[in-house]
Length: 193
Length: 183
Image 1 (tube, helix red, strand yellow):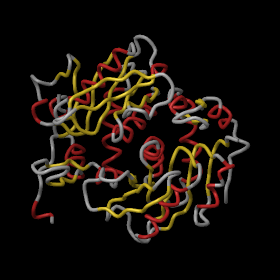
Image 2 (tube, chains in turn yellow, orange):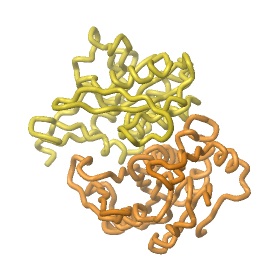
Image 3 (spheres, helix red, strand yellow):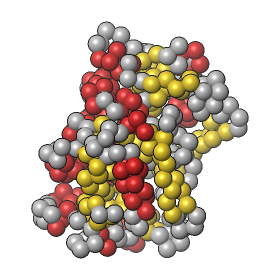
């Protein structure tokens, strides 16, 4: 579900957030309009809006674990975790986490990749939130859900700053889990050059 | 203040006890300092951030630069608390816009750190954040990137220092604040 459909219609913070995201055309390859959240991070007001909206939503949902997808999920996940008193668990590319890990493969357009979680990070039946900056195909988030569930957690929701419109009402679940998105992708403004 | 370890603060010991040392990772002979176990303890994680925020909130820091990837975990909460912008310093080809890069040495070969052009401006007062300082090579590259665009690097902040690797001496005279030493 998008925030605007779920209680935040007319909330001026959503426009501030959307306007702060820069679009880079044809990155990493031709045809992709890349949603660059680094410009949002340069605006402390806009960055704080993102965190505040997520914290308001999750602080009463008894979430004990916030999992962030490497690397941009590491930027948004920890401030949320700190504010709601949850632990933060990084979901990482292969070989980065020490100790015992479990890994999940997921498909890319060409080939596949893997995400890992530390097995000791999760207690059985913990209520977990998964964070990433953007959801497009849902492949990475689906792999993340699998990892958390295999580790014993209950995934309550997935949350992203940006999401493609197909995740609006009616198609807003990933592996049966709800998905909460703040804004749609920004449009490329040629006049801004 | 230069090279200040917050020795007196009782929160430090709580953080230190949460760091997990993993032998022979990523390769034999390395005693890996695993901070993910600190992140599993909300109080220890909060204490880590609070200690840095208390130190920097009145120093007019306008930008917090975090080094990929574990600097992304500690940098943003500090930036949000002190009202500074957050700038990610990344491995090559991750940042989508125009970038500048700085090369630094690894044990075998080189690597590069990149920063978006326009993210940091001349006159910005910068804090560089990473989870750990070892040889200081990555932090030195970060300082160079920030200085090249005219920012003033006020300090480097790390949770852990490995003092025997003398990284502190590679920071171009910039002070280092760390919380926990590992010898």
